[in-house]
Image (cartoon, rainbow, N blue to C red):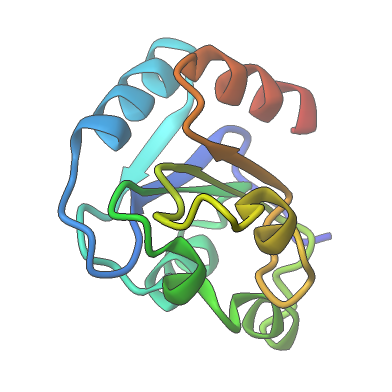
Length: 137
């Protein structure tokens, strides 16, 4: 495993999404828990998260998506993670991840082609994410 900075987390809003309320709250909770947060802001392709993980030697990435297009925004990310040898990091995504009530978005996004370790669809308690990160790291 690459040497990681102890508590560096890359955060941002993935895809064409511009909603910041979720990621703003997550970043505040992470900082309150002592994490070093590198915020990418909104409308970020998943490749930018991977670039930042490499650049910052971050332990994980937390992506937010509230527009319901997480599946479309993150397709192929798993292969890119493997090709960059970043599969020793953790990847989290949360928000309103799909608009289709017939899609089990957690099941889809946990498939290897997406590369996520944990998925939080419409989870209201941010502390669940923060506790999972602390456990995983």
